[in-house]
Length: 214
Image (cartoon, rainbow, N blue to C red; front, side, top):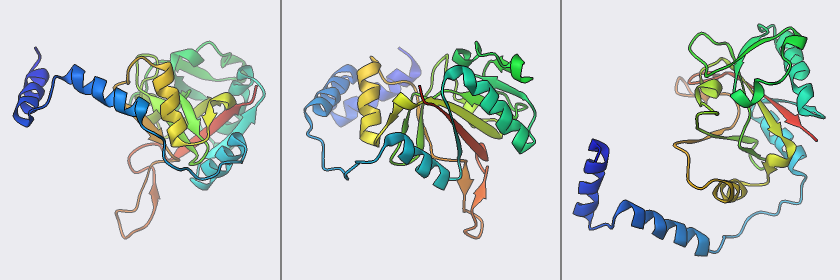
């Protein structure tokens, strides 16, 4: 037993709780049986709504017809922003032909010296313009959190209407929860100093989304 398990076990005993596995089963059973509450009407197109909401959060959005077109769209964005044509990416994106666009892209987690990080996304939420990222070996959070510029490539079929739909999709596709689920709604920002919005305070100050409309 690890020290963590030992500590949590003693807390459960003191609270009169059942074993961790039993708790998870109870929670899962509750979620499956729980009736969803009322939600606002969502008659809008998810892709159009996502573009609108993401733009309102200071993200920029582009759209391409296929995954193979993503490198050219990303290279164009970097040139327009005056950024280097060098980046790191998730392994799933390493197969794309970056070199044809004059880019050097390494399929590895980002470190403190990387300026641009290119990722996919588990899904995106149209209602809030939010990217949903799951941590894992092939989706390291550092690539979306450390670089000054985060570029996400999102399949249009993975844009769901609301937060509830994102959780339903996650529970339906994954046998268990990842270590972390990160919700990214535009560039990092804070208003701690004199209530003035400052971008890039705790993460990227640019977020660019490329939607693949198959």
